Length: 77
Image 1 (cartoon, rainbow, N blue to C red):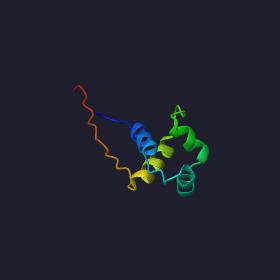
Image 2 (image 1 turned 45 degrees about the horizontal axis):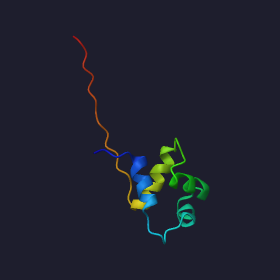
Image 3 (image 1 turned 180 degrees about the vertical axis):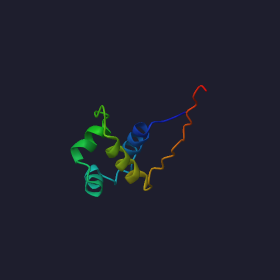
């Protein structure tokens, strides 16, 4: 089953340790506490991929890995 970055990040945020507050996350990441609160309640309909990536990397303590696929274009000869 494929899970989107948004879904995985939201799950991580909603299931974080109770000791890790939105205020602390905000201070550490620079993402506003208001945005984090709305995101935590799944009220941000089109979240910025940059904010979601920043939050994901913070919550997992690891950089997101991207794999670039090379597409070969085939033309009729």
